[in-house]
Length: 369
Image (tube, rainbow, N blue to C red; front, top):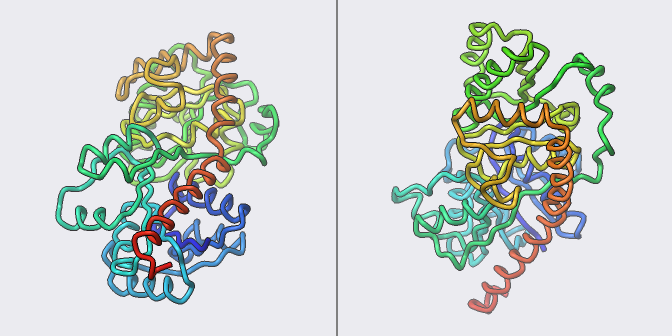
């Protein structure tokens, strides 16, 4: 099949990484992929490294008419069979590009935010033939806002653990990155934005450092909250305990050097960074938001705590750090989870969804076949 993927986001977050992993897995399955991406952005750069076909786009907004017309022409010239919009903004461009063409549009919903109620949002999602939600809670959310249940499938995010190391050599990984080999290290990853709630993580760090000054927190990611977060770190006197490492290309290795990995979001789709941690053998702590519980067999797992509660987060981290049996149990369960949430399984599910949507379109409109 020939698939057009649209992702016009700037930077490198979970959605961009999942787009990359999916396209790589689909390429291995023999499909032809074209990526409509912003030139110079990280997703475009890794696509160039992989020598994938790139269609550079610079939409000035979600409803960039000239960009949509260019994509529409690309669909015709390249004989694209299905368009996959990987973000909410990409859905608008995709909807305009396929409107009236008979080409199916599939959208991936990675966040648990409600669909917009304004006219343009309602219109673009009416053009979507299939929606892949990264978790059950995300699927429920879009259905609650009126999207037809029969058009929704849950397709979890995945990781490609084939290139991951075996049991992590934490001493080496720490030495290479200037981290005390004997420190207690907590790692978290996520954009510095309100929904990731980095200030609650900082509050939990303050609680734990009072009892153990050797604990070090490393936060991976960039975002608009960085200046205020840096000020808060200084104000709390945690300069030697809480480190902002910014955007990293070695996220997996940075995760593998940890004693525990934490995702303390207030809102989340499924939390792909948690799957990375599980795959490299690091016990995890997470807030019970969005579809995160899907990774742990449902709400009530010991790894989960309430969002926005710094004390609960600190207590759960302390539990892992002071109870080897609990840490081992979480590591073992995480390894099993990572095997199920693989990029290959994700690609297989999308491949089936693509085929069903294309076949449905052909059966309803034989002239398009």
